[in-house]
Length: 211
Image 1: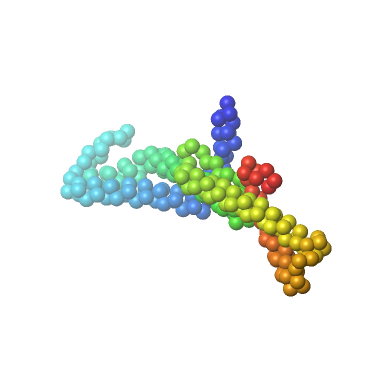
Image 2 (image 1 turned 90 degrees about the vertical axis):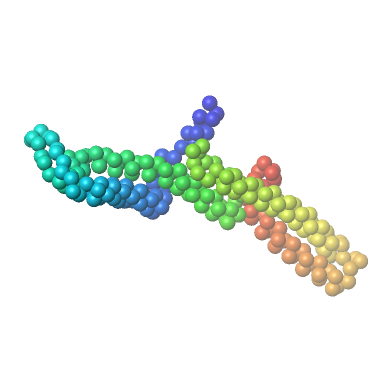
């Protein structure tokens, strides 16, 4: 029951996720089918150029050279089959490209979040999608970065607290000269900037409850 619910959440209703990418490949597959059909028809016509054939239809018998009869059948009587075959090729191409375009779209979204400092989400693909290994590695990368940034954040917090305890207003300047006190103040300021930057990242809550 849980698995079926997850499958429903991962199901994509839009088959044209990356229109430019999918359109290019669907057109390529369709063109390949047309060119392949014409190539084999021309090849068969060349091999039978000196032969005669008899064709029978509802109007009677027709005797003509084989190439002419061949092309008349392909582009005349069997045009409907070609249309159906073209639609099948287009549908199959759309399904196949969807299994690539969907993961690509998710990868782009995930990388955009990581660039923006958000490491909370994970990539989840459907079972038949391509790029499962890439998704797993990106998830591992996100988890690793989240853990290390969280560790740096903890250290920055501790360092910032320790430096502020040594500042004059905290009563920690009795054993320090004026230069040392100034250096501590500068170090505290820089530590605060580092701490502020690290706290801008959104980390995985299971790794860092305080994130």
